[in-house]
Length: 213
Image (cartoon, rainbow, N blue to C red; front, side, top):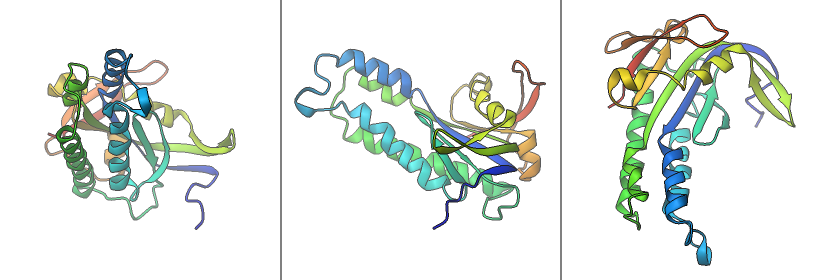
């Protein structure tokens, strides 16, 4: 099968699915279990959890999107404007909602078999999933033996992970869709909250925030 990622310039949606709260959980677990982690080959449950959650995210969004890479506790994927497989309109929101529901299902299953009930491991209850969907031009080029997406719009998509959506909604389960992406993909504004974010070296960017809970 041909590699779906081809070098060259293109334009289209850029999507990040980010697991919020996992870094804090991992740090807390590492500290709480510093004397017993990996002893006799045992690994704290928290270390395997993110792998299961990332697998579930990928199963839901790849396809229709193409996986670029994993970035710690986030999935970065993309597509081209002429890709007819990418859902549009309400179907795109349904795709992200289904991915979120599957994420919550895996998290609930993990809690049922969680062997440790310490304060650190209990932070699993605070894990959430958020999406950032942007759109624009990008360049696919070889870097360090792998094909990477680069460009100012790729940088913007990543900067949008740091936003004020959680403050606006009161929780961290949401899909933030920029106006650029919403217009290209005909995403309806129903149920969305308007938000404008500002970042250094970029003009203010307008977005819509859709709660996933």
